[in-house]
Picture 1 (cartoon, rainbow, N blue to C red):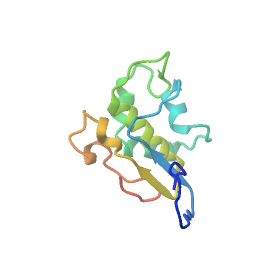
Picture 2 (spheres, rainbow, N blue to C red):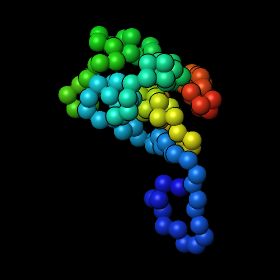
Picture 3 (cartoon, one colour):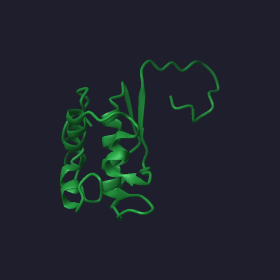
Picture 4 (cartoon, rainbow, N blue to C red):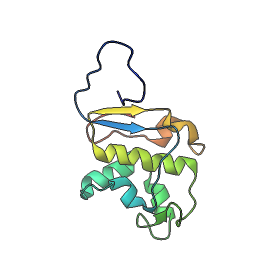
Length: 128
């Protein structure tokens, strides 16, 4: 589906947009907000829902500057679970048709379960 493996035979058809969350979180240098929006225009309702669905509200409230907090090479240190929740919020904000999750909760040491890490639904009604 992602084109990362050679196809030996047959066809692969994907209908709709794909959002992918890898085991190892990918965070770019910038603010938490920039990492979630990832170049898309800000929609406050959609953004707030993505934050809440991924249980990022507690993390963001714990930072002195909230979601404008700088992360990445020049920013604050974050736990693996915090990085994964940002990555999950990014794909939920993207509002894709297909979500590929490659064990994103592996690094959520601060979550006792997937339900505690991401308790809600995406804006499209997809449960994580």
